[in-house]
Image (cartoon, rainbow, N blue to C red; front, side, top):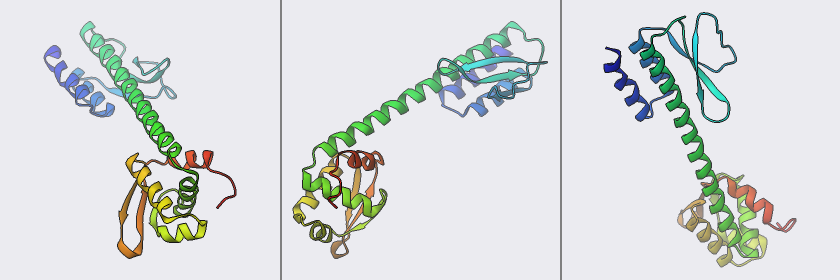
Length: 196
């Protein structure tokens, strides 16, 4: 009976179900109390624990409240802990790659800006507080004593790099949304100081 229901547990893992749901299914299949534990409050008396490794150290544990498991149950719990750990490590890796990709977009976008464009972007990011809002390109250009085409060109480059979104509001200006918050730090790093 246990081996027939193992598929239900593995399907949840493949469907990327939350770990709590996987553990609840384990408890149902094994007919035993099973829980997730971070390890901080792990009570080892009267339990058997299976570490979920997503790196060098165990992120948490699958804990079964029993003193004895048959071989089939032990193999199932061990394999589920291993799969959950690998799945977590994969998510962490994908997140790191996405972050690196976002960082590269920002670096390329910021390095493509001329000095006038960089000053314009620095000013508009300060005005928007790094988030979103409406700007009037002509007002920024006049305030900074740069051409309006420098402001427009900077916005186009940042849009093309997918680090901001912009929507024209006609005479009211342009709505800007910073879609990559790393832009603020990168511009602050490379922009000239005390020019705005």
